[in-house]
Image (cartoon, rainbow, N blue to C red):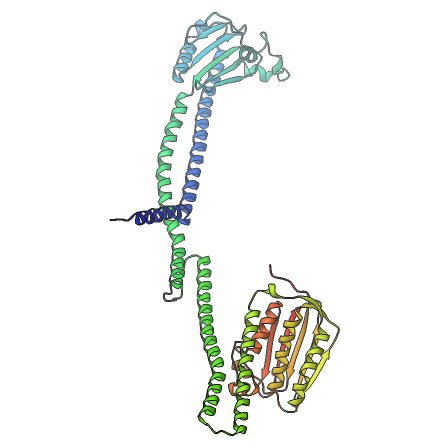
Length: 505
């Protein structure tokens, strides 16, 4: 038994399915194929019908004209217009032709008096129509009655042999006393031509209907063939969305589907990499935040267990606890900075900044640290450079690079900062003479919490977030950062940033 809500849900699902069906690609491909095939079939049928009808009518007209020419030749040779009653053979032939083509034949003399009528209605009467008068002047003409499917032709009866012997005589000079002996008016039906064309059209419609049905069936299969890969893609995406197994997609057929399949597989690989990085990031954050707390817990427990501990021991342990608190605070601050940098570039505070002065300021701030580590800082500038940057963020990025160059350097080593530009970008290079980076670690040094030497990083106070922050800052400026390093000889970081900042749309 259905509840009212169940009935409502079922109705809603049915409506959604109907709506999706009418919006589906399969239906639209089928309708396109059907419309094109039917449209082409109708056009071909109409053109074929008109062409076949006209061809049949012209063929009939040509046959009638051939008979008429033969009759005119006989009439001229027998002087038929002068004595029609004596030319019984011609009269019989006229009767035969008129009955053969379901028509009517009228013959007049040079005075347009009817001397022969196959219907025997007009004999002895005079015809004064414009067509007959024109034919008497030597001009052939015709009239088509499309409603009754009949053609009427008015042909001059003239001696062609005499005309050829008198070429100077113009057709416009034909009169009652000239070469035209009379007029042959022949009317014939084209109904059977139209009927045969209709029969041909019906056959074509029947054949076209069968062909259209075949095309429609092919359209259904074609629509299924086109949409089947898309359904597979949709199923794979739904499986991934529902938390199912992330299997690679292999769809063959269309080259576009191959491209989509390859892109989907790349996306799966990227998602797996991101998930691995996320899990590693969470693990690293937990570890980094837990380590100082563990140290403080151990130190505080040791003090609690020693009831009469000397003041010197308290001072030593409290100093260590304070150092761990500072370390915890630095990790949290770096994490907060990284979270802020992950936001969109709408948080950027862009201004025109003198990059030379910015680097001078960074060097003055870091110089005490370098002197304490016995590391020399060298600054090389090739020109004055003004660029549109976020001064605070860029200062943070360059400071991280220079501090790393000092931390992982050798005693008596150096860090060289170079500044240069072209017409579009400015480049900052930070090179050190330190311990270098192993080749296998170069691809991961910008990952969060990644350390090449974890023990040394902790001893120098590193959090593993400095290079990740630097890369985020550079990307927010639509720039790029590259690293080259030789283990045991040093590392070189190169930042390339546009002189003019282009905000994201």
